Image 1: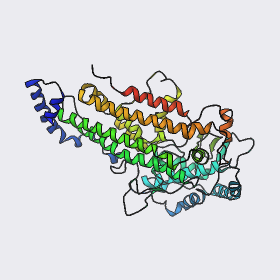
Image 2: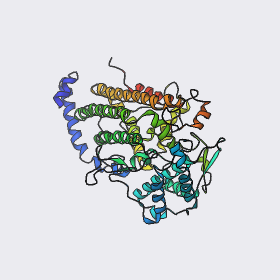
Image 3: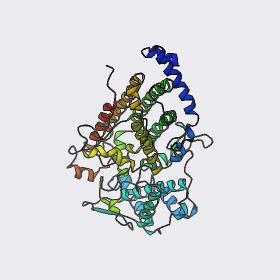
Image 4: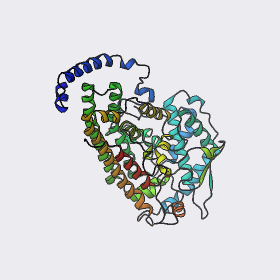
Length: 467
């Protein structure tokens, strides 16, 4: 390996050979005690599994019997209610059922979450169940000619959701974790979690399109587990310029990283055959909208100063895998000509919708004293593989823009779903009618502006060519 590195760099005769020997000597004696360093932390400290990444390694178990009201309420609501602005015959036939379901929730007592506070998995399950209940409740309320400015979420689900969210350090609303990471079950319980052994417990719309959308997101997360291993290996190695053996491994790992990013690119493209844009936009996506994003502001009954709570709803921008990739490569979303634009803070905002431990993991990555981009500046052998990884990420983000345009922007500017009677009254009112105004993501941001900024920030990360 050392000879191979020498062949790729200009020879420096005896001095270079001496540097190599010293580098190998230092690498050997430095690597053995690395794991015992006080600032070295395990992935498990951040609730990151080495095999399943940000997914819990096993499906979240049902809450204790004292919380059966929540569990049973979700089972009776998910897939059995209709959107409040759906005027189809099927939807109208479900109106009475929906009203009884909501009346039942209004009659529930407010259950203490104290019993759950010391069990991370039960807290995650509680957040998952309660956030689904909140979105089912809000979005099944029938629309009226004059939509209310405020919609009250019953104390029975609002108060415990906020309490659980504070313990998990996550926003008290439906998040990416609730729809994907915590919503899965195994097809074959005797086999481990994998791309081919996963399905989703609950769906809002009951459509295969919704299930396939979650599945694509899950596949991207699981492919991304290999990226987390690359990051972990790099920080364990902690290479320095001139450490030829270590730099050689980093070069190979950057090539490996490009391949992983390309695999995620293929996963994103695979959403097209299984998820119809019309079904996605008109039947699935409205259920995810948060407070004020596409309708009235929510009032969490019994929660003081609830207007200060973050409640935008789930977004792909809440995937910690992609944030970790940005941090590792050194993508700066705050720089550039449009840095003062309100959308440039999107990535930071989305981290507040992640579980607190996952956010801590990202902060840990950011604290590295040896960013790979800085090492690539110093080691010419790393420049090309580093830029290749950045180019792969830029290509992925360009594909994401195309997907967003097809599934959100185009649909937002259409009159209605041909074949689906669901129409988003509030969306039309906020934009001034179909075909006018901007298409917003479920996180409340203008989709194309946001995604183009991410792509351009990625492009700026590439290192200048050799001179």
